[in-house]
Structures are given as structure tokens and as C-alpha cells.
Amino acid sequence: MPYVLISTQIRMEVGPTMVGDEHSDVNLMNYLGAIKRNMLGNHFWEYYVNDAPRIVLDKLEKYGYRVISMTGVGQTLVWCLHKEMTENCAFLPSQNTAVNHPA
Image 1 (cartoon, one colour):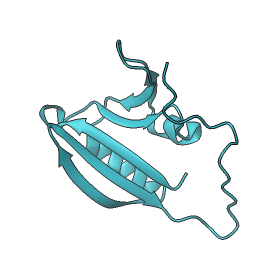
Image 2 (cartoon, rainbow, N blue to C red):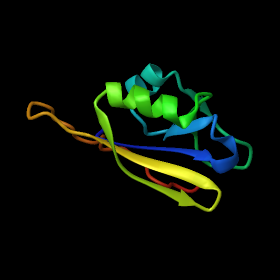
Image 3 (spheres, rainbow, N blue to C red):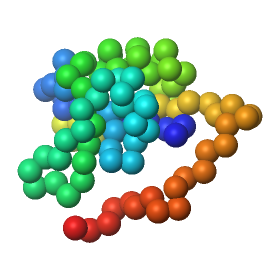
């Protein structure tokens, strides 16, 4: 997947950092050392690491990702990263990928 969003709460600039959702690349989540969890009251899963965002950004840069935007949304900091796809890379989303299905 060529795009990744990571986020953290402003008061939590030292971590944890949210690094993915239930549809994220499992290999990338393993590389980051992410743990998959479902917070009470949420109808979705998320991956997080205890690292500060700077550590996550450094790891993603080594993996070929580049920051393309960053913003603050309320009390949350969000970075969007992109990885160039190689010419030989055939990325086709799964036919049964579910997005925002209500519980």
C-alpha cells in the first residue's frame, strides 16, 4: 500500500503512535513492531506502537516512505506518508476489502 497515516495526541508526543487500521499491510505493521487492538467503544481495530512519532517516521523513511503532509486536527497530530510504487509492483486491492461497515 503506497499511503500510510500515522497519528498521536498532542499531549502524547513521546508515544504511543497510531500507525494503521485493520486493513493495513501486515508486513509493514510487523516491521514497525505494531500491536493490533480494539479500544472499548470503537467498532474498528487499530495498530499502534509505543514509540514517539519521530521514531516511527525514521523507520518508515528507511522502508521507502516520504512525508507528504502533516497537520493538527484538534488535539491530534497526523502525518501522511507515501511510498513510490515500482514499475514491476502490481498492487490490486482485495475484492472483499470492507471499508466503514457498521457493526
